[in-house]
Image 1: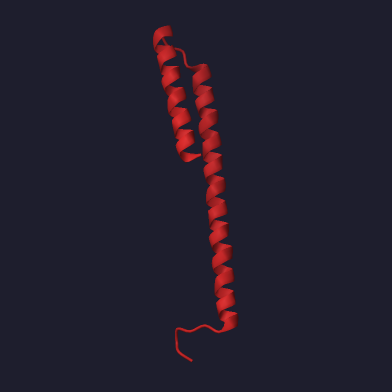
Image 2: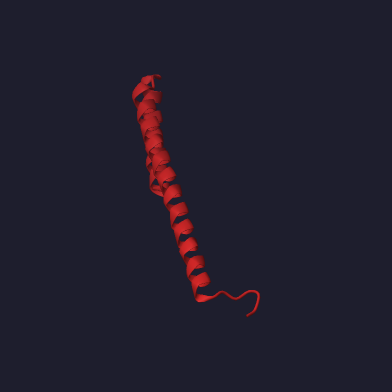
Length: 77
């Protein structure tokens, strides 16, 4: 037997660990990303509802922020 070869049980163990760790890591990162997207949307809603500027500037700023939020959420979501 060569040093780099695996037996059937060793190969099975290697693949099961790779699958478990790989899928688990992807699931954790996906969950973190979903949470970040929700926090971003909540923050944007709070800013849009509490922003008080000159009416002309306020309408332009809110529209710009809404567009940025939609683009960001679409790109990452």
